[in-house]
Image 1 (cartoon, helix red, strand yellow):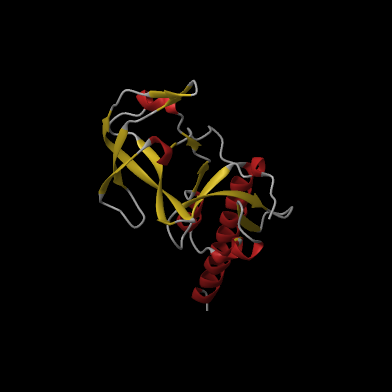
Image 2 (cartoon, rainbow, N blue to C red):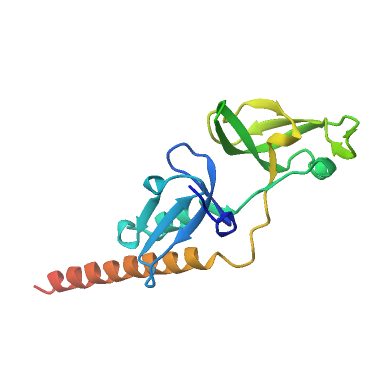
Length: 190
């Protein structure tokens, strides 16, 4: 499946396997549904949320907190930017063709002298990671630079599609609450 990867500017933490995936958000004009399309996955893997499936504002906020700007692969000359206590998005391999990404806190960096291959710098440092979620949650493992992605600073503004969907869902919740409050008041007058 060919896809324009530039449209996939967000990461979504999937409910099923708890991993982060690059996604694109699709919404109709009125913002009552939000479809999460995964990069390089068939359409059958899409997840669609409806504004009317939420009963509380905190449920909407919980979904919205599962999105963030897409993480960036760390480059060999950036290893000095990663220090103890920094949260990164790191890959975890489930096999040859199954690589997933989870958050981890860097507990230590073992710096090694970098090598140069064909004029290109190659980082040989090792990063000790404490996994924050996923199959290794609470465990420490070691990883090389190829497994580390740098979290992007959340933009000052929330992604417009997330904001529009959140607003639609919260307005619907408020409307339902107002209806139930009016029904309750009407019942008490009898």
